[in-house]
Image (cartoon, rainbow, N blue to C red; front, top):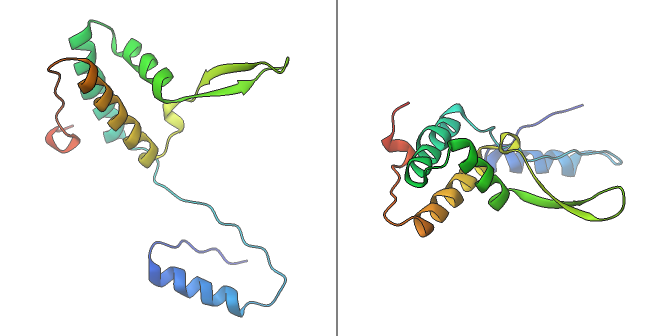
Length: 127
């Protein structure tokens, strides 16, 4: 069994050639590999973004988190009676790309709905 992690075009081309030259039949498993969310991203969301929103609105950071989780991280699923219910995914299950997009949506929503609110970028904050 061979396992490859492909991080660039050269490696992809090499694996494609190996596949072309491999005898049939064979099985391939492919899955996307994104980095898990980092402590820095988590600290930025909770210690900067949610804190600023909480300070501006008077709500707790936990309340702000629940609000945005429901707004941007939801899905519908059927219950045992076949009815569809609203549920939320945990943000801790997000990879770094999904989590970064989630943070961007939270910031964009807050800037659109809370007059005058501003956020430093993650690179402007030291942790």
